[in-house]
Length: 113
Image (tube, rainbow, N blue to C red; front, side, top):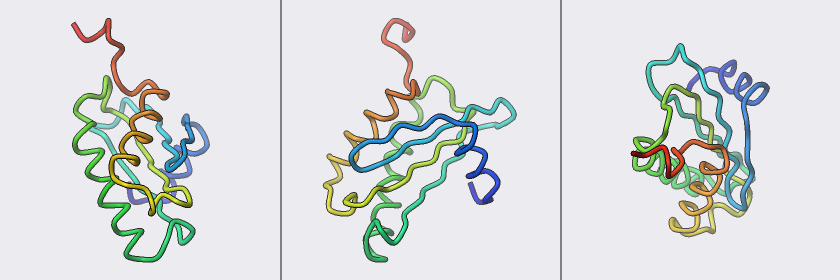
């Protein structure tokens, strides 16, 4: 995602769940071909090198877990909360996955077949 309008649309009409380290927002859009992601790391998240590291970690999480999503035609925004830069990768991953499950991004066990 690159345009401010996309971020605003996800914020206004999408769903969001907040965890300890991340806020995950999503909006299903059938007109999309694939998953569109965006990452928000403000100065409150940490210094410049911390924000860069967070974006790399978020990108890695999306690359490794997005193929498991039940529907990939959606916008997905990951927002770093203050304190996220002090979290380990495992803590970030656990929090990110928890919020993704709460948003229903993964198929339910009975739907896997």
